[in-house]
Image (cartoon, rainbow, N blue to C red; front, side):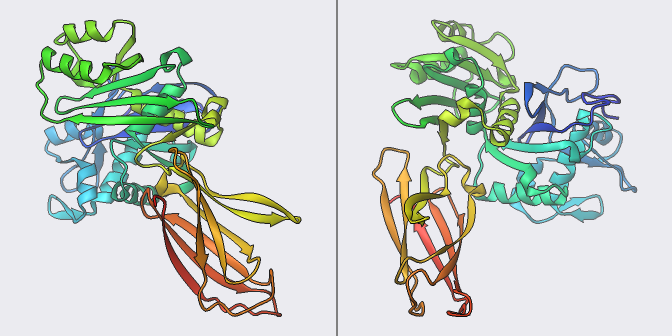
Length: 420
């Protein structure tokens, strides 16, 4: 059984959920849309333990599934355990459980859905105004798998957000007191295997302020105080680090006293393992109802759009800028559909404005074989989506101009590279 009463007992209003999903363990935090700090739920009844195993188990002979810690207990009583669910879903294929086979994405969806019961036995997915799933790396394949899982959970895609750990770190930091990130903010993650660092720096000379996060991995580092100290000195040397966060179960115990003493010199230092799930909650709130700090900053990470895309258009005879895609949004969520009239001829331009310091440029799109027409007498439907953080896919369709110039419904496909 999961928590009999739970965190939301008797409460039916919408919540924002941050789900930290990794291959070994997962974690859930939640908050309300317009108030309060995120709270992290316990992964097991009566215990102060946030993490729970990323696993499901099936009771032999019956269609009964458990997840998390309950799955481990069921496996101890003879059930069939399936762990490493994220990797299985990314690899595809089928998973054998007893004498039957299952779609690994369906098992991942089952795990996420059942795990939400940790919020309370009366919780329903419909109470989730936004469910933000955060993972270490958010590439195209991972985004695709998580979106498929959301569909199997019968959640609308408008309810689902995806974030990398780097973005969750950013979202967590900008919702902390400003003195913690006036300089650079640093996070060191250690879960018992490789070590990874995140360093957030804000360029306050730009508008909006650009936040960048440098990531570095140490897969074969020496798990000793002296090894950690060497990494910390390398990461902090010559930089003004306002705060540092030690994240993960690997930092339990007192094996790194010299490293801790070094890190505490002139810096605020925190230790815990629920930074990412809380950052996912803050990200959900920020994207639902942007705050002043969020509006003033834009995060440019590996999985975000690093340039604004737009067009110069005439509105009421006055030229203005029409935004298509905004820098800072996750590239896998970036899409736009609009209609416009060609001013003349068979071409128009898209303006690309990088937020990385490079010059703006315009790219001309030519619609070959478009029938000749009068000025402003061709209506075009345009759909934009991202194939990667650098590649924009554009589909255009000729809608004509009423009965005067009938639509040909001719289709053009263009691929636009953001970096020249």
